[in-house]
Image (cartoon, rainbow, N blue to C red):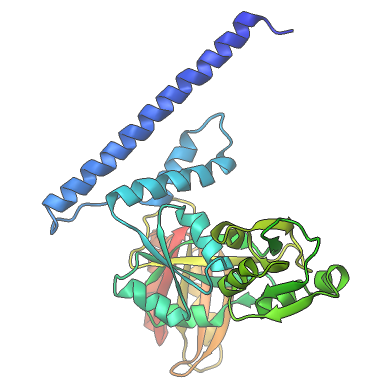
Length: 353
């Protein structure tokens, strides 16, 4: 048995740490309140604001015992609350309430932000460009189908930029008001959700009436009002519509992920662990694409991926993803050289990995 004095010492240490944590939270909230007051007194002055990614990197670097990988979700919720003290953050995302873009947005910005859905990539980008929203969240790449063309072309023709990214697993759950799969006689879901779980539904709920609806939030609303009904949706759908998970991870294919881009009008500062994505259009001649990539090879810049997409003006746009930040001298000089031999070059993102 442990000595009583040792247990009491450990408990006292925990209580002391809790008191210090409360004081640090209050100090941080007070600082953000002072910053908000300063902005109100000087609305036209440029006052640089703390950036989430830089703050998270700095705090994680200072940790020596607490697991750094597990610290990030906690830190994002903290930064979300502090940012709301400074000014409300409005986040727009693509698709339904409770859908995967909404899940990605919540994971990145926390609960304290305000969220609105949009139906198209173009409308998302316009909301941010016109400063009606602080950030937008839109799909960049899926592990099953590759890069999302609409997102790439939209960013190439917009003045907003990728400032961060977040990857989430595509996981569907069987949700019901009671939290049980027993007695289900009707199932609601979007076509995508039902299709992703077709094998499970056939094997486990083959006699249940399946109803295809346009959106995840509509499915949840209908199921909540219909006794004996269930819905295929995300964990966030369960939270938003007061439902319970009856069966977890009912999707047919496991391990599928979607990578989401966080976009804004500003690029974050260099951290030393960054990624840059640019769009370029080259002349239509033999060897031109090879010549366009030589400035990066000559400077030992690691290219992670290159893809092309048809484009009405340039015939094809190439999207090049690389390690490093756009302000790194090798990338900066490579892009300058590229501009002299290409028809179109635009950085569409440069952000911490």
